[in-house]
Image (cartoon, rainbow, N blue to C red; front, side, top):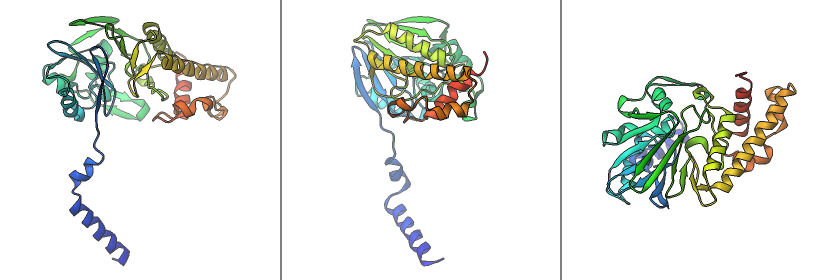
Length: 302
């Protein structure tokens, strides 16, 4: 062993002694942020999709559950505003960063509610083609016990909650959750604020369905509506309208390019997203990835 290796090994040993693994891990520990949105509705940000809590007189209604390893942190945060139990848990779609905590909250007594297709996908093995990954069926306890096809209304004390399906958008099981009295709309992953969206083509998503979903949200919202995106900070109707215009513009450009017989590489070289990249191109879906998704979707011939 040379002198450099010996010094490096000694330094690493010293760091392990003064900073044990648990302490070092805490430096990267995920923190949650829980803030009131309006009326009875709160928004929690952590690891995974944004969560909404609706506080009632006897219980809490929850929208999405993030990853399983976040459940304790989520419960601890909730206890800072109420000791009431989570009685109902609505899933906006099937992805694990929104449903991973289902089993934990179900075991605490929460009834899980979703679109029919969410239960179908959670209860069977799924092929996430976008990430070349097989996702095994979720534990039975995490499957929704109450499902619907088009829409559902839940009365949570004074809060009327309108849940409606948006077809073939981010997935084939997306729903939006509108808290009518509080005037808050949770859009799930039909809205990635400030980022190009992930459209899961393998789970039934499509670019036109995504744009149609944004249209439905814009129709429901008024100028005072506060919007909880699936990912990102709290938003509003003006930002949503701008987002919709961006996606529709990019899609229109790619449609015309395909009609002219341009290849995917030629389309990427045209820089059809360039003017929007500073605002939306810094997420995990890069501009090229977003163009690739749209091209793949439009080229399927369905």
